[in-house]
Structures are given as C-alpha cells and as structure tokens.
Image (cartoon, rainbow, N blue to C red):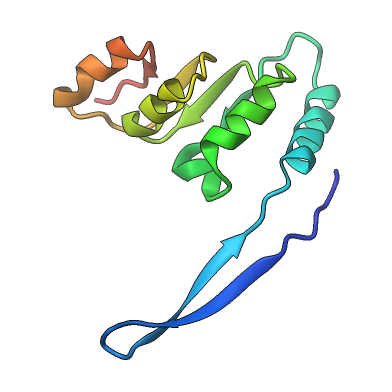
Amino acid sequence: MKWEIVHIMNEEIQNANGNKYYRVQANVNLNAIRHNIREIKNKLKQDTKLMLIIKADAYGHGAVPIAKAIRKDHFADAYGVAIIEEAVELRKAGIDTPILVLGYTPKEQYPLVITYNVTQTIFQ
C-alpha cells in the first residue's frame, strides 16, 4: 500500500453569533488511491469482480473524482452508493459503470432507478 501524507488545513472561523468553529480541508491524492486499488486488485484472483463502495461522497474524498480516476484503469466492476441521489450524481458526471444503491429508496424515486440505469437493493 502507498501511504500519502495528506495536508489538512484547519481554519478558525467565527460565525455571526460569535461562535468559533473550524473549517477542515483535506487534499486527496488520486494517484495514491489508484495505486492502492491496483494493489488490492492484483491480490485478487483474476476473475474476481470488485465493487468499490463510494457512498457519502467516497467518505469525504470525492465520489465523482475517484470514480473518474478509477475508470481510466478499469479497476472497478461496479460502484456501491448509499442513496439514489449519489447514483444520479455519478451518472450525470458521465460514469457508466454499474452502480448498486445499498440503501432504501422511497417509491417516489423509483423512476430514477430506471432513468439512470441503477441497480437497487430490495428491502422487506
């Protein structure tokens, strides 16, 4: 695995009420992520399928940039997301890799599953 030292910027901000909080920014190295996924893929049997879970904006790393970076190397056979809105965001960004929505989708949003060619898990 390739470990990358990530620069995290903490900026102290004061809101209108005088409360202080910190804005945090992490710079993500997509080459390091691609390298790590390549290493994982190389350890799998050749015919093993790999689904990358990129829910919650890839855990804050940026789902669209990661999906686009990984697409170049054909590492992911599918992506897993938590909610239909995440799948729609990926499709609108041009990601055509299969997507599985792992969470519940309200019936009002069922048409999005069809429109954006997404696989939905079934709950009972």
